[in-house]
Length: 286
Image (cartoon, rainbow, N blue to C red; front, side, top):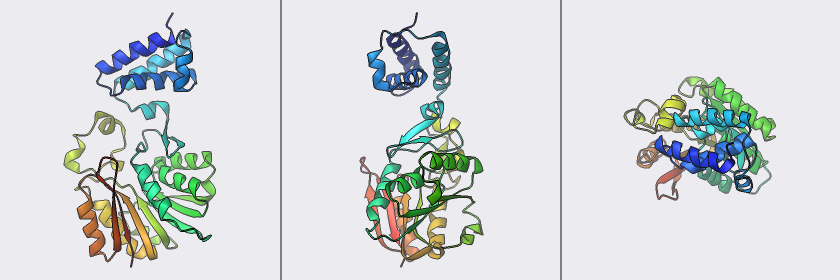
């Protein structure tokens, strides 16, 4: 008979041997999902035995995590800005640092009753758009992505959180000229673009290289291609005094700032994250 505490302890040791960081936390979260309870509730049932079906499910989860498949893909969800966001291998897993991007945009919005139009480029799971829509009922968002599979996940997330009426999802490759076919101009453009350089991609964690969509991680160039393209497009897509907000890859702030300046943007602001890394940049169209 395998009890909850025994299962956690055995799994922690196994995952640690496989090089999984935060092995006990992983063990607890996987078991909590199997038992359909909160992680904290596990501490109330340490002596409870697992059923045969629960053991089978837990072993399946363990086998996947042992191969470094991301925890979020196994669970099928992650938390972002206080929201449960559905994810699978078709979308990049939302990171905590991207919450700062959402926070920066929300803090920039004025208190008027006017509608705010936002273009979210490379929406992935829809996490940025959905967080913005849930926290400000004046925003109306066009969210684009090159991946139709990603947009299905994004649409499902928007439906789950009751904001699908204010977010329009469009399949679009922003590196082609059809980005200029969008029918109106925007107050804000936001993007967390693929910013990992081609030569750095293979050096990333196994969880990323083996499982997350490559097109959402690297531009297969210098990590700057999408920034330059979006800033250039912003001259046509933004209203007067419209803003572009980007999440920055480490070491990219100087180059992106130059792109803004060369394209005539003003009031360029760079924000650091909690690790003192330049993480958010905003430029204003003249």
